[in-house]
Length: 310
Image (cartoon, rainbow, N blue to C red; front, side, top):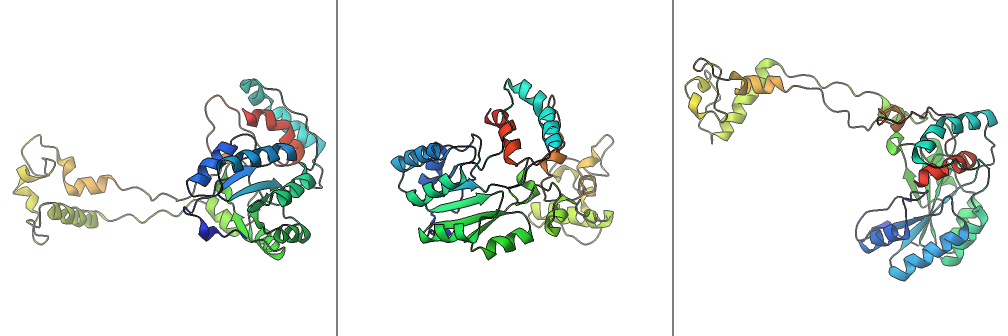
């Protein structure tokens, strides 16, 4: 069974359904030492078979196939229609017609049979947790099973069915996430914290910045400036790295003195978290899609697929 530690480079290509992931991309990742992936979403099983054949004709390296887990729930018809009407202007901007919002299982059984027949190295699942019987079937063929999760409850469920690896996906994933349900709100405490603003870093006092500036400038002068006593910048204005000082001749620029330079650049620390896509400012000329029905529900995916393929 595939082991991540056997990769020459610790890189796994994301299986981006809807067009971005191609056999050529997976081949390039495999040949570079990473793990390439074929995205089977929105495709029939025979089309996936052809992509596997193309990949194996170019590389002998291990690779994976991603499969969407079907959902038995039906979307609210009114919410689905409202969602399609909301994205219609964007489809018109791209010059495409919206697809038919029909419900299907994305060729689930045929794809499971295909990956077992082809004996791929890894099968990953998105938008749900497969039954234990499915995992055991793949394990019986020597195929590693990875499951996409977005919170603690989903991680426990994936572990319970025997997943070999968990693909943890947070709110920074972008337009949607591969969770087990269609909730737009984060259910994991850590994910909620990622959306919350980070606390501001305490600012240094003016005296601390002054002392810090003298120390830095002193090190730049190879230790010739002593840190104790009165400010020696006043005696050597011409030696300052930026040519200015705070008590020089009339007209001198005092903004380059370490006192002023370090006090001037104080700013709060960055949060370290990317803002969720639906909370970011949209590019000029595009409309914000506010939500509507489950974005990753099969019917919604079929309706919006022409725009994604562009």
